[in-house]
Length: 336
Image 1: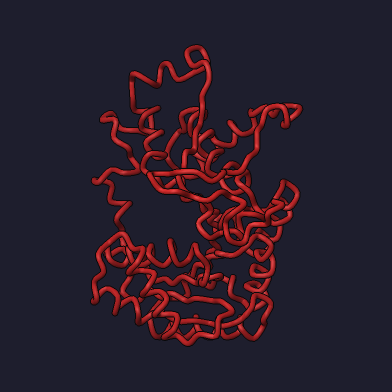
Image 2: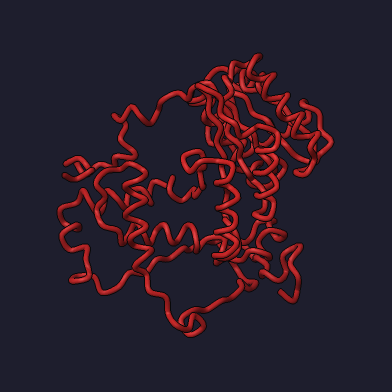
């Protein structure tokens, strides 16, 4: 039986599906690398948007962890400014004041044992003051090289332990390692501390409505599904067309590159969604099983150099405005 309903609607966007707008239970979020671009532009505004839509519990707590010499009030001001600039929903003072009650900041480096003890004390305090019930997710908004030390520190200080009736989660950002060997080593480190169902490997492309609509287009459309196979499709091109540069991420991007930043995650997800067989359901395990089959069947060329082209964007005009080239961006090595 098809996992999609007969209407052709996207089940992941169905307004009648009460699983989507449910309010989260008692919980808190700890963001490592909270001073970074991702946190300021995406994570903090997203937390506020959830609160503004009534999807966070009244006692939700947000803890920032970074090297900055901040007090709680300094951190709150940074979150406030990020929300005002980047949130997708209107700013409401009453929502902000409620969110503010659960905000804390812990200063320290990732190898600082005292800082992680302060983090544990902060979480214990929030459990009592905000009623978070020991439920915390740890968002690693940090470079891949910092993943192992943060994960091990969480284990060392008992922060990854789940007591009866509570949960702990690790949220890991891309890129996950810089090659297969490092990814496998990192995976081993993560699973020495967290069980597979405790780990969220984030790919925000999967939350995009257009991406989710691929499933509806394929499996709920009686016109496309019968001919979506090699007998009728000559080839498929996946294009990621963007009109922005690196946006101040020189330190990150010049060491990672586009292949690790978007191909091994975003574009391979699109490949899998485009080519996979119909899943038995929309459960995570069923979707992952079909995606794994696709990736296992991909045949790599013997000589990647003959089938790939690498480049950097040059100076020019975009949207009627003059823009600089990659090598002219602040922080980029001219020999890159």
